[in-house]
Length: 274
Image (cartoon, rainbow, N blue to C red; front, side, top):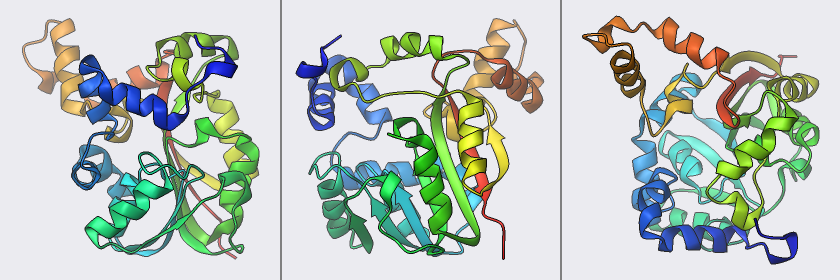
């Protein structure tokens, strides 16, 4: 593992991944491939976004995409009719605000890009109908502050969605997760919290937690795998003649009982109306 003095930037870590022949599939699964407009559209057409759309709908309104990265989720929101503000602290032309601005120009979508951290949102309270976070909460410098700010800028009855966040059962499990992460050893930016810590931070932010989706309960957390892929694998291991014999509740149970370090969870909440 690199020392803190020799860490790469996030941009350089992604550049390294993209340059490695054995990481091509991983980079594509993470939507780091180019051209960005094609990667973003592939995300928009993915099973993950289809499952997100079932949660948020396409009614539009003001959406804040916190930690937007390259802008694939901002693109998907804009394509579905939302008025999107993409918040991204990294100015990078490859993996940050610069990339989002170029994506907006290339696709002729209106995406307002703001370079700032999620813990200090430069917006008035009660401003957004939706706050969306994809793979963001586990990167928080302060999880409680980030969630508190998300709750503050949500309108009453506004929707909070945080997807694909890494969970550990115990803090002692964190090194096992980080040791397996393909980029953490290069840039050191990954983390994971316990399920209790995520829930507590969201609830303390004044958001009513409506759903907590476990690793095998939604296509959101399964991507790039699918529910059908998981059922096929499970049927094979159990020597069953057909994956049709695997019910959804069994997948959900397996996900709920998993203790794998870094497993993915998603959270759905709503700010109470006034």
